[in-house]
Structures are given as C-alpha cells and as structure tokens.
Image (cartoon, rainbow, N blue to C red; front, side, top):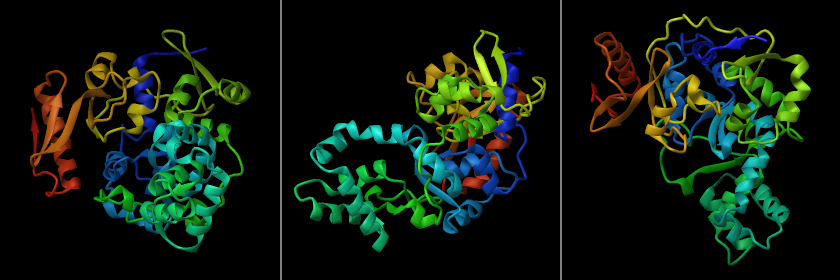
Length: 362
C-alpha cells in the first residue's frame, strides 16, 4: 500500500481542482467536476471559476443559470451551492438528512411545531407549480393556509424539505439583494429533470473522489455533512485504490485517477471564501497548516478569501476601500510578492473597477 506524503496530496488536490493549470474545459463541465461550488454569496462561485478556468467570463456562468443547466440551492453541508442541474437532481436527495436536520433548530421548530409537514410541503408545491414565487410571496401563501405562524420561516422550512432552487436573477454576479425576495422554484419544475427517488451515496462518493481524492471517510463526511459513510465506502472498496498518509490514515481513490508529481510547480492562486479546495477535507493540512487555519478561524470554517503560494495558503485577501488588500501570514520574498501582485491584477480585471482599482500587500 503506497504512502503519500503531504506535498503529493497537495499537488494532487490542486491538479484535480484545476489550480495547477487553468482548464480549457467548458464551464458546465468544470462545475460538474467540482460537484458543487460554495455560493453563500453569489460572486464567490464566479471567482472560484475564474481561478480555475482559462479566460472565464462572468457571462458564461450567468448564461448557464438562465438556460437552467446550472442551479443554486441548498446542498452539501446544508449551505448554498452552485451545481449542474443534472447533479442537483441526485445530490440534494443524497444530502437530505443533513439539510432536513436544520428543522430541529428553534428558528424553524417554533413555526413548524404541530404542523403536518407533508401538508405544508403539499401546499407549497401546489402554489409553486402554479406561479413564480419569492420566499416572501410563498410565505404569504403559507401564512394564509396556516394562520398565526411566520410565513417566511415556513417558506424557509419548505426549502429544507423539498428540492428547491433559486432561479435568476438570484445567484448571478452582483445579485446580493434582499434575501426575502429570493426566487424559489421546485428544481424538477425549473430544470425539467426529475429528482432522484432516493439517496445515491455511492455516486456522491465516487464523484467526490474524482475531484478531491485520495481522501479518507472522515474527509468525505466533512465535505458532504453526512455521517456513517464508512459502510458505503467499504462496499465500494473493491472498486477503489487504497493509499495511506504518513500518519497511517487510510485514503481511497478512483483506480485510474492520477496522483500528481510532488515536484510540480504551483502558481499563485486566489481563492474565494469557502472555496472547494479549502473545505474539501476534514484534514485540511494538504492545503493549509493548522497554525494558519487557527489564525483564520478556530472552527476551521475558512470563511474568508485566501491566496496560495507554492500550493499552500499563505494569507487572506479582501476587497475594501477600493483596493484588493493582500494580507500575508508571513513575509513574501521579492519573487513571491511580484507573483502575488501579478495574479492580483488579473483578479482586479475580473472583478472590475467598481470593486477595486488597485492591489496592495499589507
């Protein structure tokens, strides 16, 4: 059983995430390879694709939203992601246990306690099938049917119970807006693709490994938000290649997936907040050291934009005061500083002068 050192795991992750070399694949295929891109804030999915896809332009992803081949909705880790419509149809039912578990939180429980949830979703489904809705307008329908309860909270609960997506203009570049005015639609009505009739954890694991492997069972669980995947991985074991880390942890991978040369050079890359590459594993040392992770967040959420030098997180960045401010965790050499500023200027061209006009290292 081959042992993989940290640098090999780093370069393999970067290669599969298109962070060693930008890909010329069609944008829809890039989205599919990544399985799901974090999109709590709409612009981050665009930045995540810009840093991976050669000559990526805003309108390329926006067009995919409008032709309904890409959707935004709640998926892995119970957060908003962008995924290919064909993938949402099986991924959402697969991660439904973690999505639905939010109903136990007081925000939802106070409004759904005593309700027949099947009746709640039936009313919502019927209304969404008849007309376009926002969270606010769907909430009004539900409040009329279930008086004395908070309509928008019930609408939010429906999103946890059903495969709901958010049609454009939601999700497109610059679409921050009022969350109550977020459009809501049943995924299968919006995309024309029927939702899978049950979870497909084996499909999810294989797709995950293609983009994030080699990885452990805890890695898959941390990325997806699901638990108890060991049994599923064990059933797949005859179809998988097995490695070990230097610490002895077992890693799984697709049998023909390439393992990168640890000596490959890694260019500077700017990642959006909550990027796939940063959040794809429980053990994130393959891209960020523990000390740097704790510097950002004790909870390991990594909810800030990051930049990579030689393949590993070297600091954060943000758009503020008309600047792209680069904040290294440790000093940069002259050559590293030039490379960081060079990539930052490319990012400035992408985000546009309304966001920032200059890049500075603080």
